[in-house]
Amino acid sequence: MNIRYERQLALDGFGEEAQRRLSAAKVLVVGAGGVGCALLPLLAGAGIGSISIVDFDCVSLSNLARQTLYTQEQIGGAKAPLAAERLGKINPEIKVVAHNKKIEKPADLSGLLPGIDMCIDATDSFASRLIVSDACADASVDEILCSAEGFVSQMFLLGRGVKFSDIVGDDAARSQPAKKNPIFGPAAHLSGVWGAAAALQILSGIRDFIPGFVQSYDFSDNKFLSFTITADESYQIE
Image (cartoon, rainbow, N blue to C red):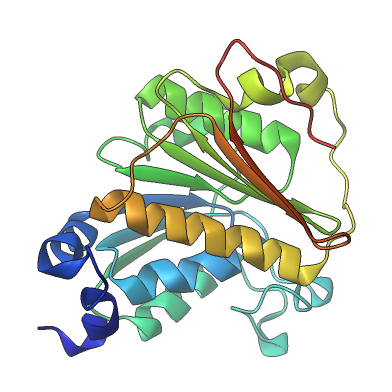
């Protein structure tokens, strides 16, 4: 038994085979901000064999309240390589690759998706989420979308015929201007924890992937929702 993973290996229904599946898994994470900072260390610590990180942003002072992978001394540094360096220190047994690039259209991701077992979208705008979802659909890659705004955390399982545009509406979502929305740090981290949990359970084989599954939690009133939506239904994100 690998001592590093002994506590998760002891879980009911997990064991050595589940751990081998994680070690063989290849995950692409788009976004290394507040949500990404919560989920990336959990993926690395659990032993995901290969993690690719895509982000074009640099660390700023206003990030540090919730983006806990970074330090004040790293302000101005590119997030993707900084996050990759940190994950390598958390778990030197895994492979971590940083892609310091901006995603403006699905084609910008197309070269990174072949061979990927799961894509996790941790970006922070409707436009970027639509782009990532379209790219994953084109490549037939399952997707976990983790988002947070205000006090609200959300997670979506997308793919196998269900895209983000099917849930939020294509035209309205694409027309929303990019802006810096208010964010409660724990809401961003809860979304990341949910995304990491779903990825680890699905990739290890102990949880089924359910396309269109959505869950949401609002810290302002402690309300939790979960449901499954199909491509021919609509769901309005508040």
